[in-house]
Amino acid sequence: MGARKREGQSHPSRGFRERYTDLKRPPWPEPLVHIAAWLNRPFAVTVDWGERHPWESMRAHLDTVRCRDYYMGAIYLCSGHGRAASVQP
Image (cartoon, rainbow, N blue to C red; front, side, top):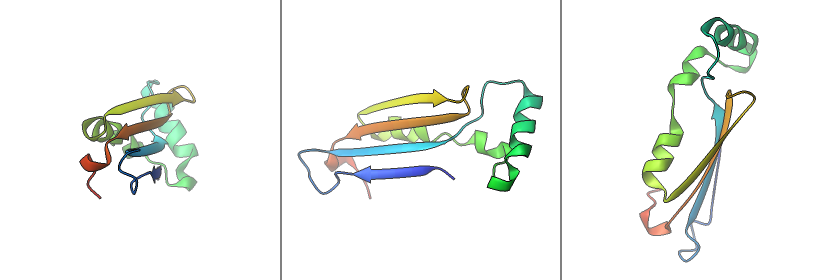
């Protein structure tokens, strides 16, 4: 469901950069979350997507991580940078 992009792995001096964007459970009232999931059902959206937290893994493995929320907290975009030596393929 999410989009992911890696670049700079082959150049040790520049390090590693990763970007990730996906849906997350917004801080909305529960009935509104279920209505939004139902409306987006044709695009494989379910309420379960709110249980994933890939930004936590990015914060654990990368040196610098920045995240921003969009569409009233329903979509996030995270980008991070780390040393190439610390990255496991």
